[in-house]
Amino acid sequence: MNFPREELIRRMRSGQLYFCDDPALAAEQLIWLDKVHDYNALKPSQQEEKKKLMREMFAEVGEGCYLETPFYANWGGKNVHLGAGVYANFNLMMVDDCDIHIGDHVMIGPNVVLATGTHPINPGLRDQQAQYNLPIHIEENVWIGAGAIVLPGVTIGKNSVIGAGSVVTKDIPADVVAAGSPCRVLREIGERDRKYYRGDLEIDL
Image 1 (tube, rainbow, N blue to C red):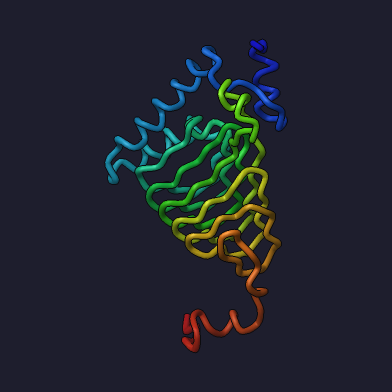
Image 2 (spheres, rainbow, N blue to C red):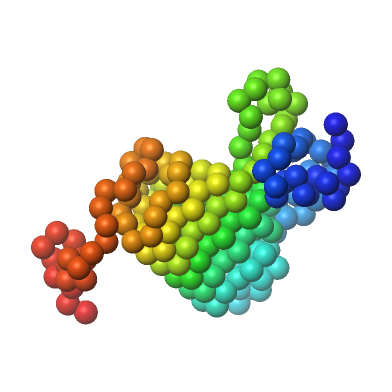
């Protein structure tokens, strides 16, 4: 079934099924993929050029955001909303077929995947390139460790820490340390964390 563009875009954002190989959609996507290529081609010293291009690429960009290169986004950041002071290390991969909301002062380690797009289990539908998307919300002050994968529809609550290599399949509440595959809450962030930054190493700042 070929949907008109407006209906196709609505379905992409609604969690409904659509066909991701629509020719008009693919042509539009290439425009945004070119922007990712251009961003990755900039030298580390070209800070102003990077800031300018980020403002073109992303749905929203707060002050003081920085993404190390290379980074990848299959819609070029078109559906990504960045708060202030967001930092992402090398090889961030965003499957931004619908909205990804990243709050203020979020830190993202290297090789992290944020994936909104997914496919039905039914093999016949997959054979027809059927897809659906669910938004991701990462609230302020979250730290996502290296190699973590955040799956469609997940919300990570403010101040929480996601351990390296985790696969986040369900919502994670605020103010916790969580890790594993699937990712589970290990403990709450508490008073001890105000005194020690690792084991018995005291904060001296």
